[in-house]
Length: 135
Image (cartoon, rainbow, N blue to C red; front, side, top):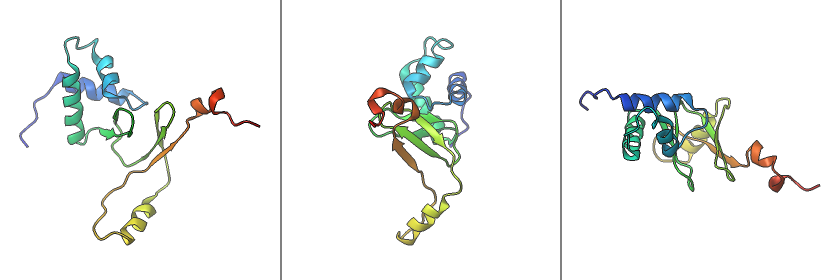
């Protein structure tokens, strides 16, 4: 690939994601950098997010039924996705490479990586009346 031209917009997008703890959507990134780049388009944000993912500088998290989210932590780690509010949280786990090893025993190929995503109700949603367990 040819040398990548420097882009202030792309650097701002990367910095914005690095400042977030909540795995922002493309729309959140767009809203967050709009003040610094009032003429930026949502399409430009999407293109730069895709490029940053392709370069391995950020990670894309597909949520299934919600919009994709972005994470500045590209090291292998697990996530929790709330099935009610769709928030995403990092989960720090001890070494779980045993999952990869177990899968490799039953797979005719080479597994090089894995992701683990847990689903449920986050603490905030669990504390709402709707999700409290009845006594």
